[in-house]
Image (tube, rainbow, N blue to C red; front, side, top):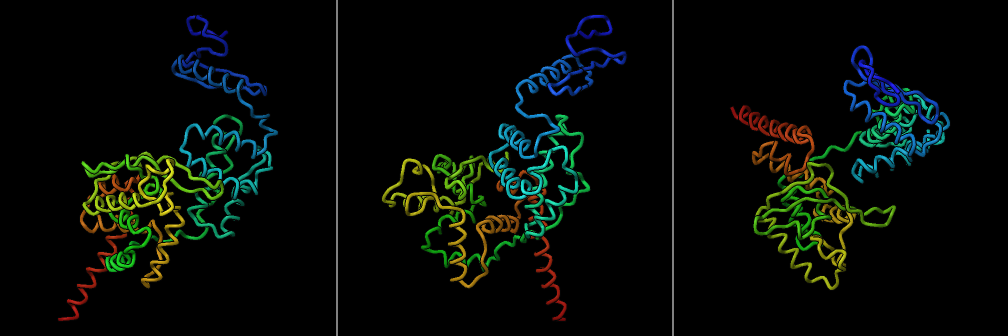
Length: 376
């Protein structure tokens, strides 16, 4: 039993130093000593209690013998309780496809920075995009950092010196010009998903948010919709997955334009004409003629056909969201307002849209100046 400076017993593993700090000492089931100092006795006791509980209930093996595969399974099991399901899926996908083949069968303690670097080099050789390689880095770093924080490892091998800024550059998202937007909508008339395309251009929803929209989220009286979920079809599992929006900022209320209200009313009438809708899907707004949600990839495939018919460059569903944002900027909308409408977690993401649009406007204005100068 340790004691404080006045001689009072504090409990097993706890003592008070001459500096006034409380010292906690703990020996885990592997015989490894752990030591930490605290300003408050309460914090010290809490640390001892947590360390004891984790040690008694953990099913991880001796750190020196543990494989990376084993540590990932342990770590991802914990992450499932603290992060969104989409994040868990992204971590798992990057691990299985890119990290596991390189270091999965290695002992955790044997992984060095050079092994981490090989993961990213291999991904670059396989022509992964820079953004995907960065996702793999986040998963790898967090996995090892958790091991370091829990003293399973002395250091994190995924250090700053390990480079991951490589791979194919992400495709630049370019909004539709007003002329191309007009042409697209003309050719989209009476197409299967016309309502969906028009609705994104009026609201800026992500595709998953559009797919997951329910009638309970629509308020015709206040002319608003609530974004509460995101939904996508997972081909690997052959099932629909309903999850939370992309971030906390993804939960939002979006005011509807008159055009958006009209689109929803048209969709409501369209759904009434569907011969059979199962109880599983009857609350969802945008359904196909079979009475089921439309897969994300199906939307893009249908988009490409319209673009080819209209003889305009192909684009994805996300470009419709990007186009909505661009029209808002052109109309003079404030960045903070647009951030809330789009559900961006960071104002910097929104400001990048403004920078791009401003550059286009500068070119346009300079073109007018050039014409004026040439006329002199």
